[in-house]
Length: 427
Image (cartoon, rainbow, N blue to C red; front, side, top):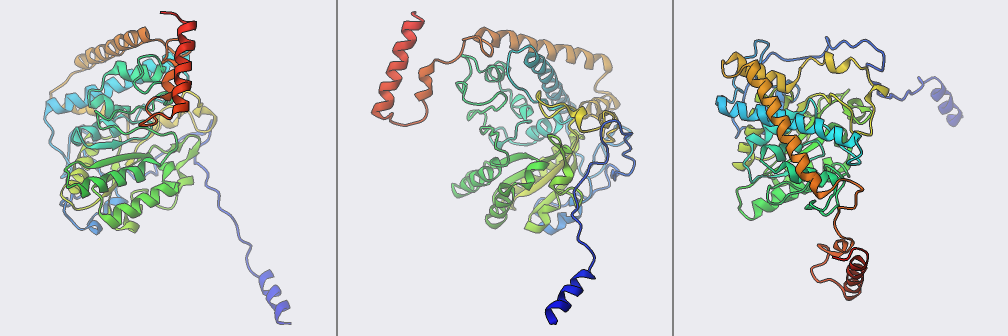
């Protein structure tokens, strides 16, 4: 009887329902971002870099902004950069966009198999790179080409890698845009997302063990915060006070999955720092001054042994996930033009103009110059070949850079590959 009564009680309970996140706007919908909370520039407090992590908790749900509607810098987060530094950041962002546009065109021409643009997200990599020391180790995701460009990595080398030609320093072993450069403190990009987070934390821990002065900074998309690696990395960072920065680029979309599937409906991504007891900041990712200020703050905090920082850059992926993606299939075409935080290049340009340190004419001349620079680099890189045209690394190089001492059987196979190449393509 007791068991039957239990069943009866269950029948009287409300039925459970599963919540499936759904984006607000689908193709064809009218877009209205008026309900999005956009903080007033300059109103967010800037705690000391050595503060207790809990003092940053309110900043995890606010939005740090410096550039106001009047195109001027406001508040305590204003990094007070010189006009020359601002112009350098503007040029780097413009160069990234010109590079993206040219390489996108190259992919459509069949010169490479794949490319990913960072349109609308240039500040997240360029401004942050300007705030870091040039030898700080960065662990990027696949939309941070701006870091290499800000560090003056040769464009020709980037294009060689994209084309997987005979000039590719990575010998065709990485997918296009998955760069790596030890000399520029740029860790190898991996297509397996979130793996770079525990790598960054581990590298930072090792740097601390060696009593070095270099910190680590990593980038990951908001979708990848749902990976287990994200939580493992934050646990180790918190426990061992690792001198690192975890940058979460919340561009609203993980390919075709909107940010709600990673938890954005519940709270901000920066708020995850609260649970781990580390410092957290939520930043307008389309405000280059705010991006610089936050990265600089977190770098100073890490370098002075005050612990890791989680930064969420609230931005928008203006174009498709990659050349393999068509965003019109899953989101409204009006989202880009209605995005309330604007375009990072336009905002920095307008700020410099408002300061009397720039002009529309100078900006047009700069755009022409950076486009010519990219065009010349492409022409030079194409001398080393493009995808599928035979100008690639010899087959026998597959045996290199794997073993310190090559086993005898692989030595034989390598020698055979060299002989066959000489027979097929005599010198």
